[in-house]
Image (cartoon, rainbow, N blue to C red; front, side, top):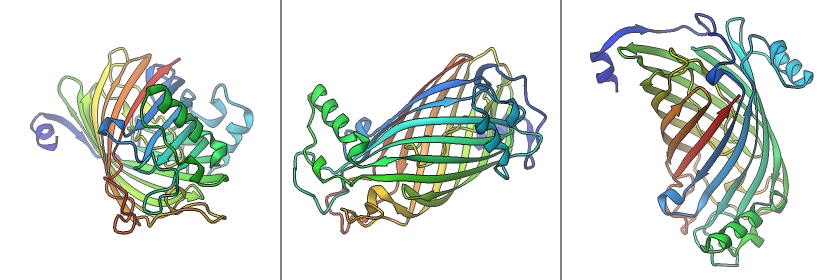
Length: 350
């Protein structure tokens, strides 16, 4: 992409942190309120194992010039946003996002009723999230609170068994061995800074962003960094959304109006990410009670490749997540592959 971009480049900028030419008029296209339905699954790769599926329904407020100006949220949501330090300066816009969803994890052998010691645990989570964030075209900072439950109370086992039966595919037999019920509390902090942006002819553009995140809690405790690259036509301002199972990263929509808000946007994204994981309940087991677990990898890398099509009233996104091994397969000998996932998201606005 870089070679192509430089050959037709007609403008280049290297923005500073928090710099912005000021927000475009709000409540148009990507800046208005909206809902996003996201599904992650490994069946695109012919698998049904490890963290094999997740879904989330997200709601995003319209962007606002201040926390007090946020629409259609309770007053305490606005007050809490204003109290969170380091979420922005006077040149950013602000948004709140909420999400609810489930995560499913199963071993490779779904027909086996007994505990499979050499594979990942059966595990399910039902989670809800609430995110506060401020962003400009060049910088992003946000904090998310996640709560919910891991274990039978999540209902994931019942959902998977019913859906597999309805579809006539292998019914998972081992959900009696799943992780036990546990209340989940997690805090996720995310920052992004745009390192450079490029403008070309015919409304084409690209940008490069450096990101960092810290997640603390009994769902996932980790820290990581990423490099995010976008290239496309009539590309929205702000930052690409990187799909993850709910709770493993922030729920957000950090997009600003494209150069031509009336025309569709089409762009691709490549995200390269490295994460150090201290604890993951899906691999390390229950926090306060004995449960099945496997030896997990401390350092995990991933590449996330995405295609995005956006109009003023709706958008569609398709991403492929290609991670390195998350499990030590020398001890968890039944684990196969690296847990690739594909994510499909549909958003409607207004």
